[in-house]
Image 1 (cartoon, rainbow, N blue to C red):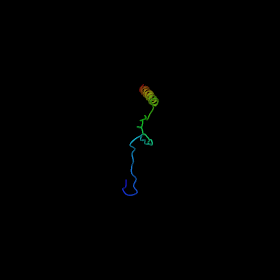
Image 2 (cartoon, rainbow, N blue to C red):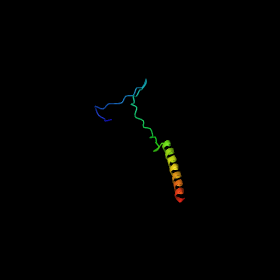
Image 3 (cartoon, rainbow, N blue to C red):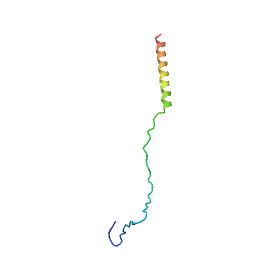
Length: 65
């Protein structure tokens, strides 16, 4: 605090309760990591890939005959 004739002095009570009002601040939580693909989408892609591989396998066998 600035010293001088107009300076205010802090006064603490010797008896009684001292209360302080504090404004609650925003509390930031950690960001949640979300998957880029859902579990169902990954299962669907896996099934499609398996079907495509099976189709290619049978197609290549038909060409050899």
